[in-house]
Image (cartoon, rainbow, N blue to C red):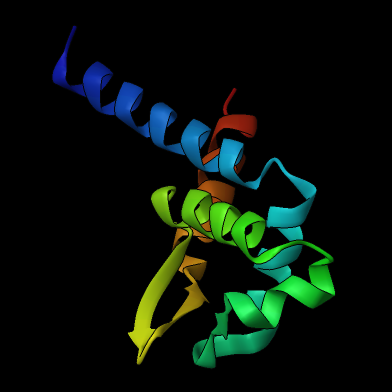
Length: 103
């Protein structure tokens, strides 16, 4: 396989991993809430009530989003605050658009 083919395979794997991470209604809602929060970010404790989910469940969702590179985490004292990585979401959109518009 050529280097170009290997690079393409890695790009496809990255996009698929990120799409799997957002393919959950709770995680989509979390991304929307993080987008609304802006650079300040949100702690899991800010998400549990609006989502109607337990802290461990929200933490699990945040871990999935973090592993997919869609959120950044910052430790503030004993709390972890999460911020949306809009650049990562934009790359997904751009890659999908590139593939759809290809003829």
